[in-house]
Image (cartoon, rainbow, N blue to C red; front, top):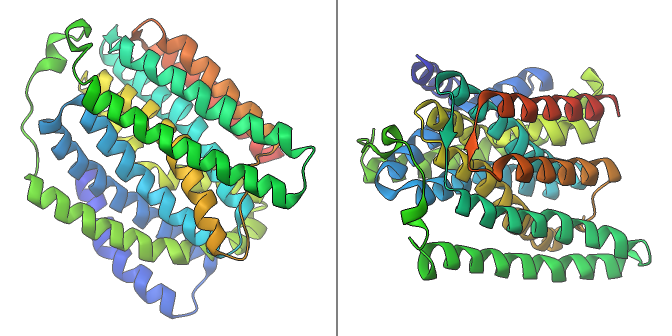
Length: 354
């Protein structure tokens, strides 16, 4: 049923988005159409990556979901930087971090916990990711803020570029560690239920999945460019600040693919993939997407230093601490999911009223 709705949304939304970008229609109407179409396209990207995940295993599957899920947000952010919406981009990065750690993980744990009283995942992977999260968010994001207080704009930008290069190198090293040098080292210690060990046939072939990913990414890139130009008008009409648009709206639209995939995997009792998607996506945002955007911004008139507002920093640090504490025992339940969701709602209210 959901897949059919996504198909209808793509069939109607893509051509309508193209037509709407050529004629002068209401910005609010086009904002809704663009957003829904991107979410539908992200749904197809999620199904394609899920098919690839069926034969690649939970680690590679989680990485694929995180990568193609973040591809949508990366595309939107690049066009936003080109339009000079630096604050929206920084806010969307904040929204991705708290959205993945609190909303995605929370919904996954809650939905899976309703069906299964206890779901177990690879605690060793989770602890490894927790260390990287602590570094990527607390060290790499807080340190620039502290040092920038004693720096001018030029020095702050130079610091941001330097940190961005270090983050990207460390992220690539982390992938090399997980997928090459230490691949399978902890595999024998993973505590998985029998249901999560069952082999699942992929919905689509690898070739079909790759073609769909390619076409969907191209469509998302085109629509995202026009979506960005509706932000100012829609924000004024609904009374939304750039901060709220970035933290909530752009983050949810841009990360719809892994949102759906993580929840589906949890419902199928494959909670390891859900955890890998939530934490892996957050790591990718903090250690690759954000630094990449800092470097890309050097090509535009408006440069983006890696400097967040105090509410953004506190929200991200809080999300990391809460996630690390709840994921440290290797299993989940619906109440832990509800706790993460409650934290996300509290932050959402704060950003809306700010």
